[in-house]
Image (cartoon, rainbow over all chains, first blue to last red; front, side, top):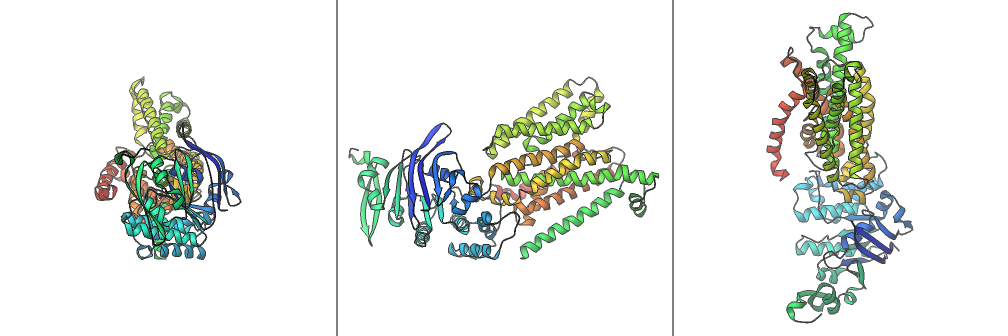
Length: 262
Length: 333
């Protein structure tokens, strides 16, 4: 088991956001974290990373994450934040190399293993072609790829990503979902919060549906994404179909507008 | 590899430049001494007039120029990296204003007249007190915005108290002395000032230098840096108390000298590939160069008028900063 979460509770200020969330992640899973705005998806990811105070038990493999240092956690999971924040005009390669930070003690230079990991990550995200360019001058899609390459260079068993597909064009969205699916196929698990139900249905191996700070559904996409749950949680009617053996979900309209009672 | 060798070249050039300016600083002054005479006097055991001028007047002045400049450049680069804000400067977290207030209290109360070291000591104490308040306000999980706001509040309060001291000053001479001290200068400092400031500056430098790796990671924001194993509490502690120790000591012996900590990191950032960890040593050397050059200039421009160093750095620094903003405004937007 890569990650085991038991009864996780977290508050933002005085407002409780997570009311006891429990789930676990096995190697090889690509988990989509779905739910309406304000349901607690980002809070859940940030609580797992220890970025906000939380109650409950979080275990990373054999490591008790609630009492681990930031560096110990960084060996087990990498994180791609929602904001694509790059403060200074540093070269792309240097930015990707930051992913090696937890692996480098003190003031030591990059080792050959570090360089190989950086190179692999850059190739995988196809950013090695502009490694010398200043990261602040890239387009939104390029920035997103560089930041994911940074997280890949950390070479952790678990990757957490907060709305990684936001602001990407369809081809980059699909390329990213393919990459996450490939990572999962190579026994590295991915947990990504997603708003696009179509992408979630098509590419994730498992979905966690969060509403009001609780997990309301957990399972394969076809079990979680049903007409009933979408009406109850999102208040939308959707088209359901199937092509090439995989689920297709397209939200159509608000429940109220179609005149169907919830 | 060319990246690393270019960085080495930049550091080498800055170090050479700082050395030249340091030597120049030793040889410029109202007493017309030859270069070889003055250098020989520096290392001689005789107690003649030249030896006295070199050892007691020019050496402390040049040393303080080097140390204060390095402090301002280093802490400016560290704070800009930590706060991820190109407008950050050492005074932002309230150190300069509160150190000034401490000095003003020493002058105003007459303590400075009785016991000369009361001034720097009181300034240093006030700087430490101010950052303890800032740190307490910001808390352990304080965001960078809280630190900036707390620093602004502390600075404003210290400024108001300084104004009150000027307002209520019993005699115009004390008011004049306070005003002149606040302008910032390296004139008439002794080796005692050097020995007093040095330990605090060294501790501050070490703390700020330890931030290098963390500042690189912070390029991607607080949360991503934390997810890469950076202990943000340690970083905040090092940044705040490192700045307080070094800049507090600098302000205590030289007064408030503006614009060096703001402008120097800006000038050097493109030369080091914008990398925050590399900017630290470069900016320290650059700050030393700038302050030594400015201190030489005040002696050349108006040898009789005692032009204040802080006035010159602001007169040159502000238009230069405007030009930098003009040049980089597209990137800032």
